[in-house]
Image 1 (cartoon, helix red, strand yellow):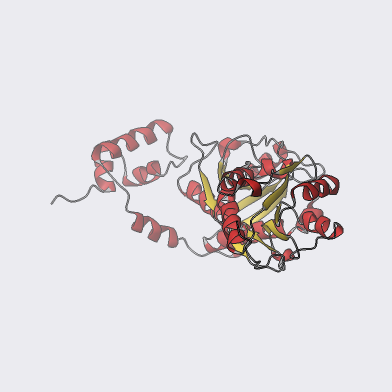
Image 2 (image 1 turned 90 degrees about the vertical axis):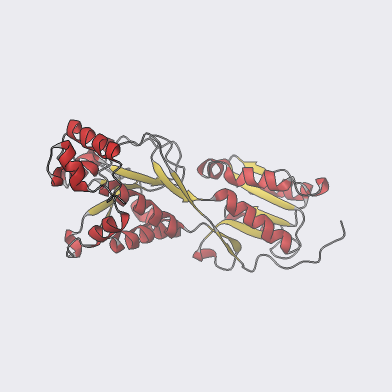
Length: 345
């Protein structure tokens, strides 16, 4: 059996040094585009394949450095009020997950606030370039119409969720479709039969309409008399909710926000009582609620993995074929649902 093709074989055929081949295969900017393409073509012709075990070993041989000299991955926030944003459990989960994963892999994170006073996308690009920061995680924005104007050609960047519509980057996000299916299955197992969904248009856009799509699909398996139209609100509001509840009388409500639970109490229908409640975006602030945990720590860690992989391959700019990685949600059994007697169908 012939020996596998190695990097020296590629170097000999291409007429370059082994170090040149190593850098060319990693798209290192020190090697000209013409040489990179020629070396990579030779590697393909010879059938060269890098050994993933050796690559992993070499990455672990990076000399340990004090924390303040570790390479930096920037987290870019589009929010005008950093102090307000930092109070959000959603924010804390994202930053903690990213920080833990970056540290585990020899990096550290720094945060930048693009929409704060005297800050612009152009200035952020200048700061990142001046400091040699080439990895960037674009955090979810509070609005879906935010357009980032960064110097992408110098960045290995990924984002979280669907709020960043342009340009299209690699992204890590919640598997919203799976999460809704999980809610359906758990609710039916508890005996609920008339399942209702309350969601506002902003959340509908932020989740790429996947919650609503999964709900409507799962609803087809219910008896027609138990199918309730989705309450899709332009803005969260109690008035339309009360009318919807009175007309359709669900026995459990899936709410996009915790305000839905408040409306139920104000309507003299506190959960679990005659109507249960499940939160679509559960976090530890609402630990007594039933709902699904979208696992933001795991999502941000996955985004950091994407960025580091791009950094190691020297991939910069807007990807020709963006990838989406979905993390499945987890069910949290709280006190806003209960096992109910299943009525005859």
